[in-house]
Image: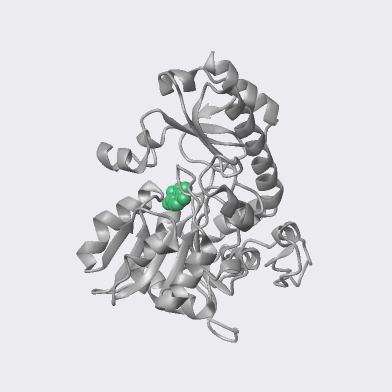
Length: 378
Ligand SMILES: *Cc1c(COP(=O)(O)O)cnc(C)c1O
C-alpha cells in the first residue's frame, strides 16, 4: 500500500492495516499489553518504543499518505515539535524558523531553546531569499508552517526544499493545517513532516496526539531521544486514530470545499474585513498555494467590524470554541487562544489583531454555515 500511484483516499482506508492472522478481521485488533514476551519472539516490544502493531498501523498509514519511510507518535503535537528540535539540535547549533507559526510552537522556541544553548533566528518572511539572510555557519535546521496559523500565509516549499539542500540543512514543516490530503511536503523535498494529530488526523475533537514522519535515517536519529523523553500514546488511542484516518480524505475534501464556498461568500458581502483564505485570489501566496496544494484547507479568517465576542455569541451553528479540525465548525479568537502567550506587541507585529476571528470549517452544509455568519453580522 506504499505505492505512490495509489490515491490518498485508498491509502486512508487501507494503508498500514494489520491483518489478524486468526480471524482475518478488517480492523487492526487492539493490542492492549504493555508487557510482551521475550522468548521465541521476532522482536522485543514496548509501547514507548512504538513497535506494537497498533503504533505501527498508524505510523505506516501516515507514512503512506506523506510519502515518508518512517515515523514516531507523540502525546501531542507539541510533543512532536519539541522532540524534532531537541533530538536533532545540540548546544551551539542554529535553527532558521518562520516567525508566523502556531503560537505554542513560537512560545516553545522562544522560551526553551536558549536554555539548551540552541541558537535560532525567527524570520519575518516566507521566501527563500528572506530565509537566506538568516543562514549562519552553524545552521542545521529550517522550520516552516504553511498555510500558517492563523494568518494563512503561504510558504513556497519548492524554494525552501532547494534552499535547505543548498545549505545542507534539515527541513521540517508543520503540516497540520493542510493535512496530507491537501499538501504532501515530500513532493517538494521537505525532510520532516510534523502533525498535531489533535486536528484533522483525528478529526472529531476527541483525541490529542502528534506525529513526525521522515526518512528512516532521520527517524533513527530521533528515536533514542523520543524514548528518553517518553511522550507516546497507548494502543487504544492508536486504534481510534486509525479509525479516524480512514475518513480523513472524505472529511478534509468536504471541509476544504465548504471553506472555499464560505470564503467566497464572505468576501462578496464586503462587510467583513480582510477575509483570508488561500483559495481566494486576494489571499497571500494564492498562486503558490494553487501550485503546491490539492485543496486550500478548511480555515478561513476575517476581522469583524464590531465586538468579536458579541459576534461569536450571535452564531447558532458555529460554536465559539478553541482548537480546530473537527467535523463541527468552530470559531475562535487567536489573540485569546492559540496566540495568547505572545505579548500584545508581538501579536500586532504579526498582524494578529484583537478583531481577528478564525473559522475552522466542518462538514456541515456550506450554505447553512455561510448563513449563520451572515445572520450574526446583522
Ligand atoms: C494545535 C497545533 C499544534 C499543537 O498541537 P497539540 O496537539 O495541541 O500539542 C501545532 N501546530 C499547529 C499548526 C496546531 O494547530
